[in-house]
Amino acid sequence: MLGKIALEEAYERAGMEEKSAREAALYLEPSDRARYMRQISDINDERVKLSDAHGIGYTIVSLTVPGIQGRHEQADAERAATETNDWVAGQIAGKRDRLGAFAALSMHDPVQAGQELRRCVTQLGFHGALLCDFQHAGPDGETYLFYDQPQYDAFWEVVTELDVPVYIHPAAPSGIVYEKLWAQRKWLIGPPLSFANGVNLHLMGMIVNGVFDRHPKLKIIVGHLGEHLPFDFWRINHWLEDVKKPIAKEQGHERMCKKTIYDYFKQNIWLTTSGHYSTHTLKYVVEELGVDRILFSVDYPYETIENCCAWWDGQAKEIQDAVGGVDNYRAIGRENAKKLLKLGAYHDCDAPVS
Image (cartoon, rainbow, N blue to C red):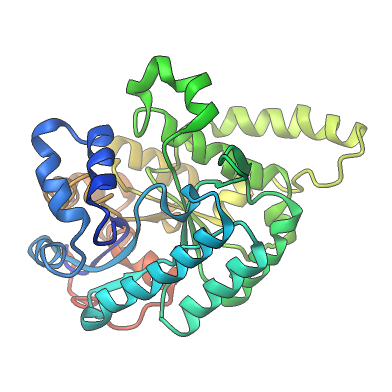
C-alpha cells in the first residue's frame, strides 16, 4: 500500500550518542544496536529512503524516550523543548511532503506547555504533541506530574482550541518506581510490560478524573493497539459502572467520569498499530472500537520499517479480510490519519489501493 502514514516514529538529537547507547542496551538485542544507533539520529536521509521503498508516504517524527518528561528541572526542560522543536523543524524543512513532527513539551507548567504547543502548531506547522508519559519534577526528579489533574485543564484547553491530537507515549521506569517494582524483574521493562502499565494508568486516570468530560473534543492517541486496555474493556466497564461510580457518588466525588470507557475510546481516543503487528489482535480491536479509531504506525527505529511493512503489505489480503475489506484497510493505513491531522497533499497521498 502506497501513501501510508506513520505516527510513532522516534528521533534523538545530534550529540546524544551516549544516551542512545544506553537506550539501545535496554531495548535492542546486541546484533541490532548498530542499526538503531544509526537510524535514531537520522531524520531525513535513511528514514525517508526506507519509507519510500516500503510505501510510507508521510512520517510524523517525535523525540524519543524519555523526551522532555525526563528533565526534572523546569527551566532546563522548557529550554530543551524549545531548542528541540526548533531543531527538528529545521531537519524536516526540506521534505515537508514526506515529514512532519509532534512537538516536545515541558509539562512542568501547563500554561507554558500550551504556549509552546501553540507556537509549534501555528508557526512551525507541527501536527500536535507527543508526551512521554508523566513529567518528572522536584529536586531529585521523584515528583511525578500526571496530566489528569485539574491544573492541566489550562493545557487541554489549548489542545482542543488548536484541534490537534496529543500522543501519550511510554517511558521506562526510573528512580523509586524502578527500585520498588522493576529492579528485580528488569526484563519486563519496556514493551514486555512496563510501557503498557505506564500509559494505561495515565490514560485511565484521564478518563476517571473527568478530563474528557471537561474537554469533550480532546483527541488522544496511544500506541501498541491500546496498551492492553481493549482486551479488558468488559471488566473495566463493569467495575466502573456497577461498583466504582456508586462508591464515588456515595463519597461525593464530583470528578468521576460521566460516560463509559467505550464512549471515550470511540469519541476521544485513537490507537496505532505501532510495534504490534498481529492481524488477530487488530481484528479484535476493530470489532471492539470500529475501524475509524485505528491508525497505522511502525515504532521506528525500535521496530523496523521492513518488518512492519512485511506484515501490513505482505499480508494485505489477510488484513483486509480481518478489518472488513479494502476500504477499511485504506482507512487504517492513511485515511483516518489524514482526517485526524487534517493533512493536505503529501507523497503518494492518493495512490490507489487494491
